[in-house]
Image (cartoon, helix red, strand yellow):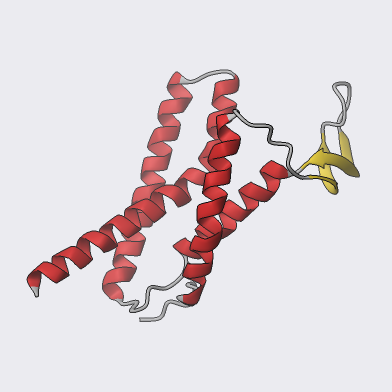
Length: 158
């Protein structure tokens, strides 16, 4: 079976090394209990709400990029973890991977539909922000749970 779209297994370790600290830092940012202006920089912005009166396009802006850096690290780490081969990638693991991805997308959109119906205002904007990450999170949890459950079953059969 060819798995051309998957990365080498060694990227999974790198992914976990990036994903875990980015998740912890992301939770710290989301808690709102700490000063989160850690990284300020001058960056190129395609669109920027420069002031309350007008938006600016295709210019440089001095801004806090803490959320940007941590969000990017989270996505990179999660994608490396999600889309790296297992040591012994076979058809069973490919099937588990596919079913986990399908399950993650379905659960994500069921949660999003629930939020469309019952959450409004700025709280909904926060939910939409977190929604960018939930497919990867649900996939990682589901895939690793099924792999763990399968390894326990295989161990019990021996």
